[in-house]
Length: 259
Image 1: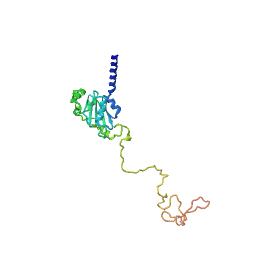
Image 2: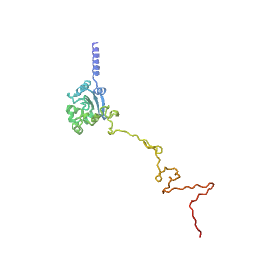
Image 3: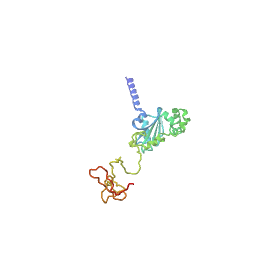
Image 4: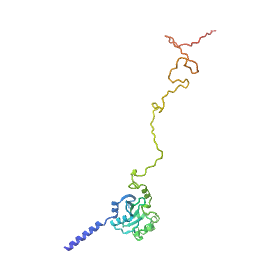
C-alpha cells in the first residue's frame, strides 16, 4: 500500500513539474504583440512588442516560463536567452519610450545573420560553437555582418515611422502618414458649357451690330432720310405697279439715236 502511494505521489509530482515548465516561444506568442516577421522557412525571426516593461523585467518573465541554457547579465539595453532550438534577443525599443522588443530567432537565422563578435559579447563562445558549429566563427556572413538584432535593421527604422500600425507591412492606411499637399487653399469647379445656351455672367445680353451700318443684323433698313447706303447716299425704292409682274425700270430718262 505504501509503495503504491509513493508511486502515485511520484507521478503527480512529474505532472506538476511538466505543467510548470512552459515553452518560452509560446509564452511570447500568447502574451506579446507581433509586429514583424523576417526570413522564411527554418531561418526566421519573429519580433514582438511589450508595452510599459523594461528589458530585465521582460527577460525574467520569459526565463520563468522556460529556463534558458544561458542568460546574459542584466542590462537596460539588451539581454539574450539561449535555448537549444532558439535564441531570444530582448532589446530596448528606442523608437517608443518604455517599450521593449522581443526577437525570437531560429538557430538558423541567428547563424546566418548575427555578427559573431557582437554575439560573443553576450553568449559564451563554447555555447555558440555547439549551436552553430565550429565553422560559424570563420563564416564571412557571421563575421562581416553588422546585424545586432532587429533594432539594427532598416525595417526597424521603417517600423519607427509607422508605430501606430500593427506592423510595417500593415494595410491600415488610415494610421500611416498621408501624402502632404501644397499650402495653397481654395477650390474651383469646372462645368462643360453649352455654346448655344451659355451667356456671360454678370453682363447684359447684347446683339452685335453691323460694322458697316451700325444696324443690328436681320433688321430691315428704315425708309427715309435716316436710311443710308454703304457709300453714304440715300437709297431709292421702287414700288412695282399693281397687276404687273414685270420688273420695274430705272427712273432715269434720256434718248439715243439710231444710225
